[in-house]
Image 1 (cartoon, rainbow, N blue to C red):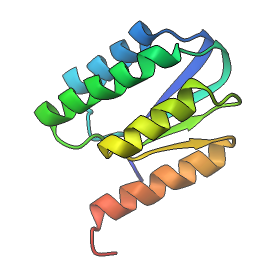
Image 2: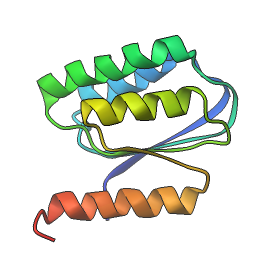
Image 3: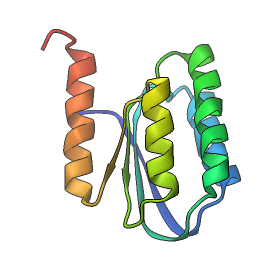
Length: 120
């Protein structure tokens, strides 16, 4: 079983909240854990302008803590999530957007198995 953090977002989501979750993950030694962000109840996504800054901040933490665990987002809206996905891909993070929680969980589990068994 993959070690995973689940974050359920309700209401608006601001960049400061995302950064707080990321900081806590790093501070608590959970940097390599998989993350599932369930944003289906989110009422206001972070601003697209903040997305690149968040991704680059995660990159800085990766330089300190090593590779970050895979991140799956379950969301009804694209917008800033799609922008983060593009930036993450460019930087090299394992990040995927889903519209179904079970698909996201399956993807995270596959990423966890791949990192636990790099040959197969």
